[in-house]
Length: 590
Ligand code: SF4
Image (cartoon, rainbow, N blue to C red; front, side):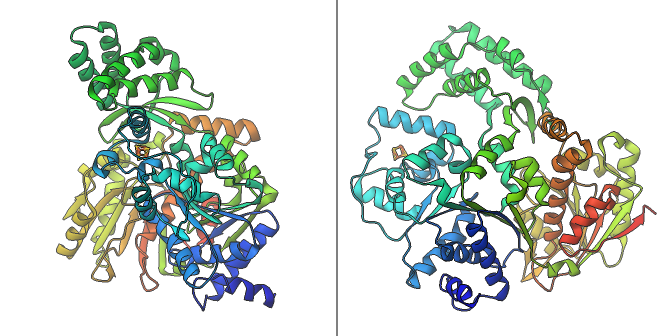
């Protein structure tokens, strides 16, 4: 054991790792040796990345793929890998983000495009030879840690697309820091295997912020067509086709009418036949798009519409076409819900994986939603000291269940929030609602003043200023919005929130895709309650922990939390809170 600890220490980016970090590194090491999938619940600021990399490198596994979602998540593995190189550990590290992030055309032009549009843009620039950068490179001497900015610099120097540089460097890389689609979009995975020569059976995958993994996989395999793109396509046809293409124009107007009629916050399912019955043939749209692109030299909105129609024509059985209203923007979305079909293949092919996050649901969830074999899973939870700083009170006798939502229920929620706000200890109260529409229903009955409600364009600074300017105040946000995760209500080195009211368990909406997933899991197991827990309860509880985390940003922070929903007092939920060291008190509504 001492020998192993010494070996692991040799791969830590700094001299004196904490004992908890050494323990995590050892578990990662053992997961690789035993070909396991490790679920590791460790708090924010623990140093998970350094520990996971140390265990991985010590195990001798030939390839480590570190998956990160956002640009900020790429920073930690790059920083730790660079420190290791500085310590003299021989390593080649490549960052593999999307081609769009690496493109050398002006950032302003590229950033505004979504990925499909960018892919078309890149194709047009290459075919027309407007892109001056070569797409292959013969030989390459690269720094040991190849970041996005270095790739772009090398690309400019050598007049080669940085994406081609990244792929070339990949062959020799021990650590690949990549975005999710490289593993979970099977066409990109094939490229990774063939072009990057990655032998999956000898690869460890580390997934950061893994609580979001099902959503990330689903999002990266879903497509959408917005109302504004349809309108742009109509304008293009008007501009380049005059009064011609009447049928196509009428069809696009019918799309807009359909969106107007059907789009909702949860998403209304549109049978593919209904959509295709009014859609113009994607082939004729495609020809029209090419004509527009030849004239303008830029990506055509008509092309975008034609691509979406062809995707609907080829929709796999585990997707659903929805009409959605996202904060006032209407769109069609092909939503991929059967994440386990893809994830299972990936987890069966790789040698081992480590799923890292402060909030991970129980192992059962990963078997159900990601299709990971039960006997491959290992689970570890770091004793969450911060749980002791959370005073959680759960209220029985009230619930935000859909079937109970009436005017009277919204009034009761408003009364409870007002009562908590009136307590002398409540100075800065964060009220969190399960959805925007639920918040709007409660809002008129609330008496608490002053108050600030999250809007679509609310910025964090606005909330911080409100909290700093008012000795007492109520901030209202939505659980699945932008302020419930990854933000800090902190200023002048202190947390500004002292009380959180979760006004209804943030259960995901019973959207058609969630209903389909529920049915898939129920049919597979025959256990409706178990399936419901995986699709609705555990995501709601994870979201609850993340919301509570807004009140605890340092070891000295304490927070009072009122969870106004009796479903949180059920045994599965209480067991979940226990994982985080939280011991809730349960009281009736009055
Ligand atoms: S090939 Fe040209 S247009 Fe495409 S990503 Fe590279 S630099 Fe950008």
